[in-house]
Image 1 (cartoon, rainbow, N blue to C red):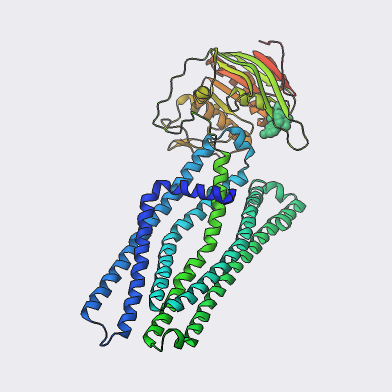
Image 2 (image 1 turned 30 degrees about the vertical axis):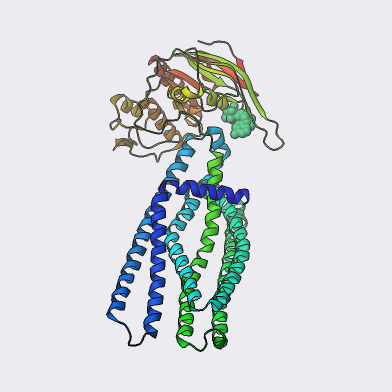
Length: 551
Ligand SMILES: Nc1ncnc2c1ncn2[C@@H]1O[C@H](COP(=O)(O)OP(=O)(O)OP(=O)(O)O)[C@@H](O)[C@H]1O
């Protein structure tokens, strides 16, 4: 078994493990359903050839088998439907949890356009198989049951039929090899398609004013990818359909052989001959149904491999990340100091670029202090705050809070000291639980930031986030303030503000927050206001240069 098959099989077994009892029962009931239907067929054949037609006993047996076939098929469907829905829920929850707990560096490396198709497309494919499973089990059982019945009717003709089934299966196997490579190539293209969709949605404005780029995205990227996927799917499905049709034809060849050679194997017994032909014709439907599910099996294998890959990528979740709301929130002792001691961090080389090396970084911040981090683009300011925030674990050195080293086990608690507005911030509409009404002071902030007339709070969420970029940042500031954390981090917050608000931010809001006892870490390019800071550090090519204390 190849590594690919191994990972898909392991993933499938892992996914099915919690539901094995229900699944085993459903499969068992599916087998019972298949056997019952085969028994019905043999009963029909017997009645057709019985002297005097159907006796009362036969009628009762017929009704009982009908009831058994019906009941077992319904229960088998209910069981697999349950398992199918549970699998979807389980995969969504477990993959969602993995993404939430993955180290930030891994998430930054695993691009969104690759993540979303796994969480949507691949999970749906796996669940499709779960829904197709009872059909597969029942059809397979009927096929095997019919073959067994054929063997009792005529061992010699059974061998001819079995040879035809083997030949059909070999054709299917070869077709599957070709078909699956097409499905795999199509799945690769799905990631690319997702990337184009993201460009279309997120770059809508840029595309509207740049005709050549828009045309290129539509005709050379989007259309080409869509058509490539279409071609690959058509080709793969055609291969499967052709193989199925060859399989169907084999049935009629076997029937023709049976009719031509009836003298040899049936000794002119017409009841054996009619039973044989009827069973073969009956078996054709279930066998075709099994074969038609083969493309789904192939797609399923690819989807499982993608899920296994994602699981593997995020197999080292950050330890001690709490997702369970019921666990108690640890009490954090009041902040006194925050320190980086000989901290090092290296981004791996990208292409021909050398790795970007940060550090050793040494920095100490006292509670209630205002630290400004300045420096040219690409100097390492954002990386420095990611290290300070505990988003990146240092590759060397230590982060200390109140003189104690922040270990992996305490890193998540440590992060709860901070509220951050990143340059590429995400604005959540909902407030946290228990904040159903904005406290009076926050309303004052909304007014002061001149968005009080635009935004209110209803049902625990801001009434709107449809604001200008600068206004959204102001709203994020209110959000951050509502968090009531001791340290606030601003990554170029003022960059989108007009000069008046920029002045208000540096000369009124920051001093106000400082007066409230907040510790403030501010990335800034606004050299006019550097004198507001208590401490100023410059980041240059990954090195921290301490400027003189200002205040
Ligand atoms: N995910 C990453 N992988 C590899 N290198 C990275 C990654 N993120 C940042 N870098 C590199 O690290 C360096 C510092 O980046 P950082 O974002 O910390 O700079 P910055 O000072 O905040 O810049 P700016 O002022 O433009 O926001 C950059 O030169 C960049 O090339």
